[in-house]
Length: 537
Image 1: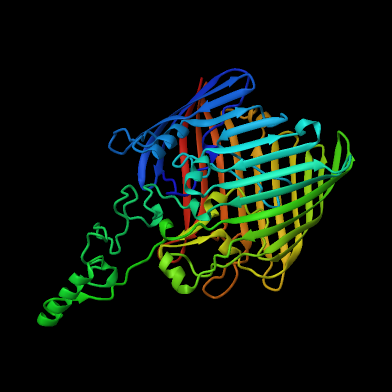
Image 2 (image 1 turned 45 degrees about the horizontal axis):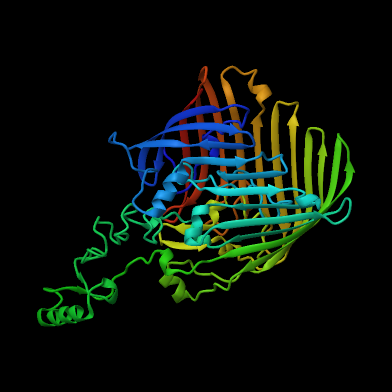
């Protein structure tokens, strides 16, 4: 059983206890992998409502492979670690409920959408849970002072502010007339590289850090277990490193050169040109912010208990910094070449949103210019903020992957239904055509309803989903584009199952699959799975 290190564990594996009228408590146990370490996790989750307030704690212990208690989540060595330790114990603290006029939630965030979703749609901060817990903030205030003005916002992780890398989303909306509503949405990632996990805080992401738990060491170019700073032969070729990046004082390098001249390379070999990787280091790269500003308007055409039809439109603009790098600058900073200022706008007009009994639908005509892409801040954003190529150690922020620079036009459609109160299914498809290959995406999900689950012995949860973005954008060795369901790094699918073992005891499986480039350069499938035994009492 393995979790993809530093990548993905969705909230579905950890049940949210319903925010009901009285206190409830659940406990779970299961095996997880955090970084490169296999740990056994025990968690106790009391959920306590107090009037309009509610708090859910997540009290956990990790046991390592030797049976000893790990200090993970109980570290107080520095002020930063102490704050993180305390916040890890908080699953959420809320005031009000999502349907109330005033609602505030601190902790885990799930399925956050601003406006009609052109900018932020389905965002969540729980992708790395429980290895990495993010303490976010979500709020809304409707009809402020009776003026018909609404405000809402989201922060992905309060701890990120200490490193200047938080994601912030804000939205203000109001009634322009009795029926016409208008809105302004702004979302900004202060530093996209904040998505690269660096457990020991030395600047090198864990994926390229040979010693991810030791701040004093990081790189091991030849993989011999000796850090480059203490290794006199970083490429293991038998010659003493004497190049400018060896760390030796210039005077000593000169002396070594004289010895080499006196005794010859055969007896005193020197390596004056060591081939070392230059992986990404946050401390050597300035923050890379990226933001999107959008406007929208909506007008209800039909409003009744059985039928709702709304006409709307959206427009959004990319607001990026001028972070273009030369090849030499990119190489020295461990950044993938091609960084540049992202520009463009997205227009979704007209749009129709339909609600008809158990059926719901959405249809938009879309036109994107230059680098714009819809739903930039989505449910996988914490994974996509910045990607790291393990083979080269180079990092690439998400805005650098928007490099399309052409106009696209097409449609986006989404449909869903609660089929006879048994199955809730949703599917969404986008097709945009331009000068090059069309830009397509497909999302689909289905889950069994509580009503149907009650009629199936022992089964308490069943859900499956599939997602693929940028269909046809990847090329194989022959230059052919990927097929509709052919796996790429933008493919993600999985399922969740819950089975009752006895009263108050259940087993939960959360299995998901994604693809990434391996160190050898090929595409490999990563299976992410957790199995937990959950007790509710």
